[in-house]
Length: 232
Image (cartoon, rainbow, N blue to C red):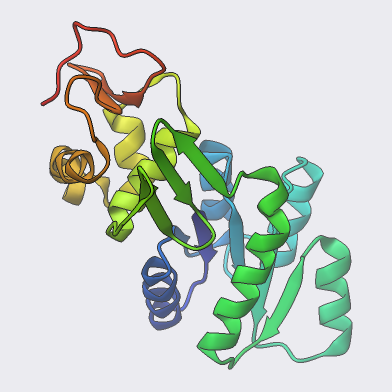
């Protein structure tokens, strides 16, 4: 799951980012509506947006009107210090899916996030399969040949993305951007390590590996791996 947090208060932004990352989500951040709009145009496929209303350059309601006018349908959870009924009604009428007034309990926020993502679940398959591998995205469990395998958060995100893109080689840069977002430059050198660890857990037959490498391009889960592709 990929989430965009739009919040101009650094402490709040950091706390929200840490909490959602702990929930195994990939997090992008923006400090104003104008910056956020640019990220939406580039990324296209956020699963959820957390939106503060009081921001410089472009306020939250203007941002919300803009993305809805552009027909973006991802759920938006509005976070604001305003506690006026009229503001809540305006936010919901503008296109917000839920509303939470600051200060709020972090556990309540996470529960609302999970609820919004469940509602959106009809657009994304919760059970992903390839060969003897079954990944349950909702329960964060992975079965390999009927045996439970424990994956780290990044291993799960990597497997999830490869399974959703089954049938093609996913470029390294695309995988790095999905896994680390704005921190790609800091962590991209570990992609190969994550792939190696994941292979050790899910590849049951070295003669027909689930995850294949196309050197110079990236990784993928293909129906019939090409014999010329080799594992790194």
